[in-house]
Image (cartoon, rainbow, N blue to C red; front, side, top):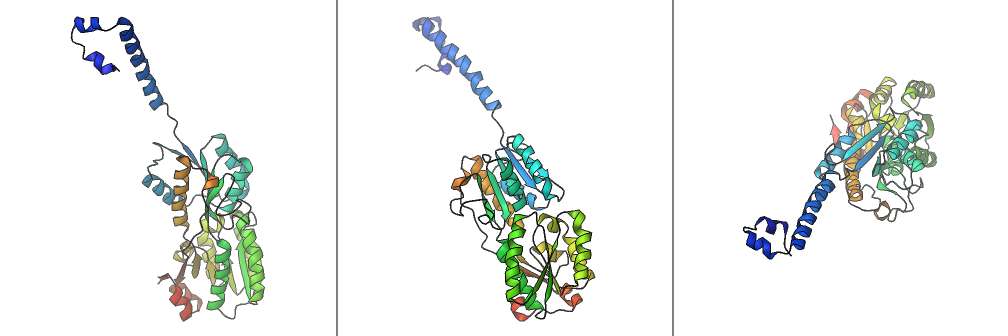
Length: 341
């Protein structure tokens, strides 16, 4: 077949005369039409959009963006990431999720259980990637870990198992502990499941568990006043976007009433908390980008198994322990993955 370049190589009228006029016109016309059409197709290609839904901005989304860049997705160039934060108010998440759905994003990344529930309430077609959901099956987000079904997949944080272990570590450090305040958010589905299960475990180890609600940042003072009236022997703070964002306030409160406290993330210990046990949220956000990449490349959420973390870290703070007058037993010290001096 004669190409467009072959036409350009024609050097004499004699050669042109050898070509049928009809063939020449058809060839030239098709080439002239096809070329601009191909250019238009390249310039009008749709840029994928990724929705990022979270109650509050954290440093964790930096890890998500970093992994996206490693996978070739550059925000503002070949992908658009639309962020929606609700300033620590979980009740605003459904309206924020609706905004993302209206933008026709290709996938929605949800940083906690409340965000996942909100996204599911507004769409059953847009793929949803969970990042830190504590019990995705128990929360009815998916049918099973191996075969999620529907439009939801992602990562579990196993917050229930870690919360039970946190309570045990607190008991190991202070064996005489009896009354424990647990800060939780009833708007967070994962917190609801954790509190119910921890209640049963607490009774088995002779601990009187006292739940104190923190639904939003405005509840912090009220929650601290309520906890102080309870006069606990120790404190557990369940992982939630509010507690994460205001971790310095929770740590300061524990120091003020001079009570040992255990948290879910090392960031609390770095801020001066006594100890933490749980998964790395930075790593979970990093891994979430892998799911987004697969979905943007055509994979369906129903076919992507939900992954659970396999590594947990215990972090202890010796300076805080000394200030509180407590000592880590050898069993806890030996188990620690990181020691903050």
